[in-house]
Image (tube, rainbow, N blue to C red; front, side, top):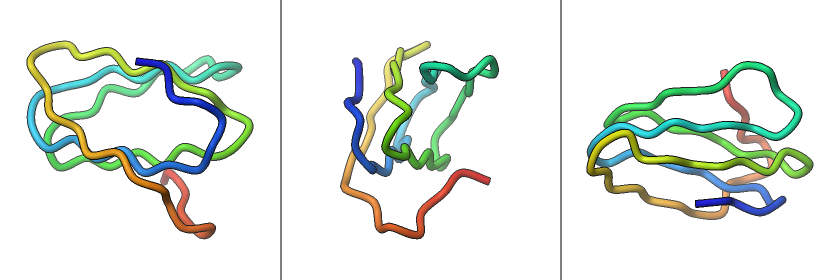
Length: 66
């Protein structure tokens, strides 16, 4: 799934996903319990590596990946 250019919070509830960010050389692999914050200006592609359940919501202005 491709997430558009908006501030979102992606929480993995079950399974494992791979996230590729446009313009970023480092991909992210996330498992259940992990949270990814998408910032405007960085569209991403999310691919399930196994059966996965995600919660996607609008994120607050202070949200950022660590």
